[in-house]
Length: 510
Image (tube, rainbow, N blue to C red; front, side, top):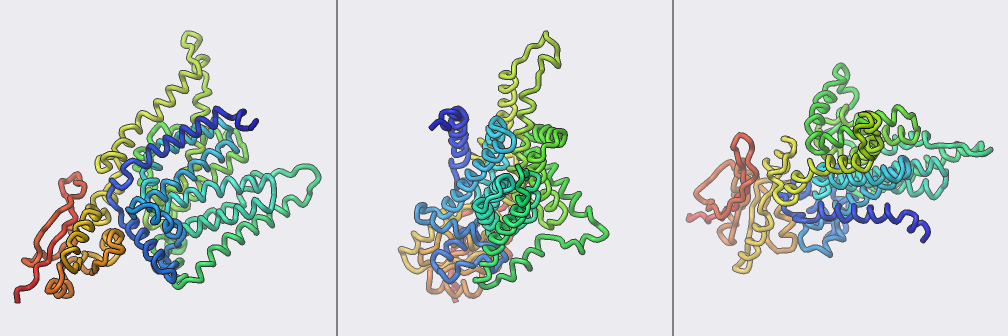
């Protein structure tokens, strides 16, 4: 109780920040069109829920299954599968927010904890991805808490902390394979080590406890051998990551292009005030040479640099797990700016109090993001996202529109008799985006190429038969297709506009 009274103001502010977090994440959670990977993950979770022998299904595509396992219970509470998957990411983001608060307080103090938490709540980068049913928000949660417990273990050298750290590291690996980076970074926590008194074996115990933590994490990872296709985890990673041998003679080939990508993403998704605060924080950490703070900075920058140097496919969400520790450093930069004495710098004729500076900082952090965040919640197609992100999430074949409405239409038709629906595509947005709404509807779904197959034409002789396709990918428009409904996608700057189309397949008169 004394602790609560002592920090009642900070606790109250944290509660307000948590409330703001949900206000900026939950409204219109299914308004944004479903993304290809979201459709796949949700469909996997549905299949895994229905068939216990397929609990390791994501291994078939070289993916780890923890996010899908975690999604399964939410299907019991939410009827809309897309809402269920995205709500899991919202909760994952909340865990990340609490991790940002705890880590900032532990390393930089309570004021930095509040600033860093505020930044996490309001920046579009985290809002956008915390509202999507993707694994990256959950990976961010495990990553930020890995740093916290690695520091705590190095300071206290206790077996229970080592075990907790091991489970967190293991959770990160089971969420996404880049979680492995945290294992390699654990020895960096030596910067937090302090030998107190005459305990000459404390360092030895710390090394042993690192082994315990890493051992638990690797044991959790190797539990995936219980399922088939474990070998695909490493082979599929080669599709996303360059090996060092491939980069011989061109070490900066992926790094420089990826740096240019970040130069586009960060100003739009983080905002210039946060970037400026980040640079101030980085400069302050380096200048002060505080080992704990350097540790947080290294844990943020090293994974970022490794991904820039080796990733084949580079998107903003792949960097999401590196953002929270960077925001901790940015919170420290905000704190340093807020303590800057303008009265002394500008002379006594300009007496500006720290309270005024604080309000100026608040306006600078909140105002540029208000419109962006408002659009994300109400009309995400108009949000000023980076070009590549907008293409993938709103314009291209990877964006799915109208699937819940199409599914409802098909279920209404099923009341009149058997229904078969074909889809353009075998995996991804189609058919998975449609599958998730027809999970137990008793409607036959026929994945196919971007044309009406003979199998679908045969089905049309006896069943009500329909076909769903991306307009831009439909290879053949025949007299046997009758357009019922079209769901336009976001328009590109050059005026092109794709759409999801629903057709009725007319049976052959012959």
